Image (cartoon, rainbow over all chains, first blue to last red; front, side):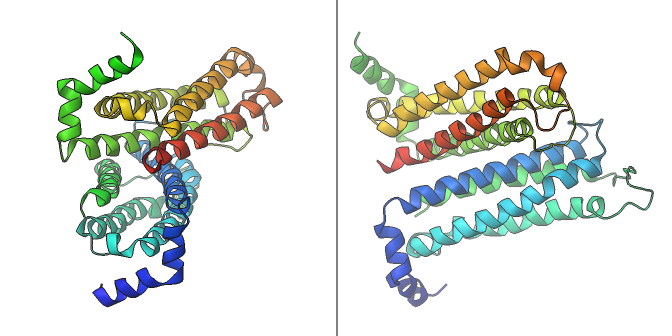
Length: 162
Length: 162
């Protein structure tokens, strides 16, 4: 991220408007938090099912299928609101190493989440109720939850790592 | 002791001073608060959507509510503990912040809404446990809950901006 690009973005009318209309940043951040609740809530419920803690009477496939679309749509909202925040304050965000760490962890967290869900989202070879879950999945499910928690910490810390 | 000197006393305690003067303490409390928010809102939304007639991961409403409630409470306790600690660090300032005061008011209304539901439609849940959509009282409770908690999130974020 070059200094010239950041300066150009900061000087743009879009960036200036976001900063000048004082309600935009807090409102966008609030929507971002609601989307965090959607993605983290969905992730925790479905990951705890895979870990054998919650809703063990329901087929894992059903629980995963119920919450995965919410995770995917919440991610889109998070990226959109995040983009507005980046455009509004590029000088604060794009030079921030905590921000870039968070981006790497978001990719990592979603990669782990996707890899454990993908086999269960496809049609089952043994029929729709079959629940053949990979033995290592419990560890991956807990790892997934932990990764999202670290992402949340990084997100809050961006403001403190200027 | 009047309210102002009580707030000042809270703010002057060793723990409040530690939080206020530490580089990492307040951001850590905020991050834990966000994790708690995500789980409070996430689990409440799952139940509220079910009350509005949108299916969760199991057909029965009663079992869903019983399944989600321990997580909602654990997350809410996390929010209260982290919230109280953050409040103490700058008690006199927060007590004069209109966003903070409105947030506390809305939290009270959200609690009242839940109490009304639990003493009302919830008492007859065996009659409508698998009905989609549930009876009107349950739908009103679900919608009000969503509106109130969304308001709590927005007001919470706006505290830092006024």
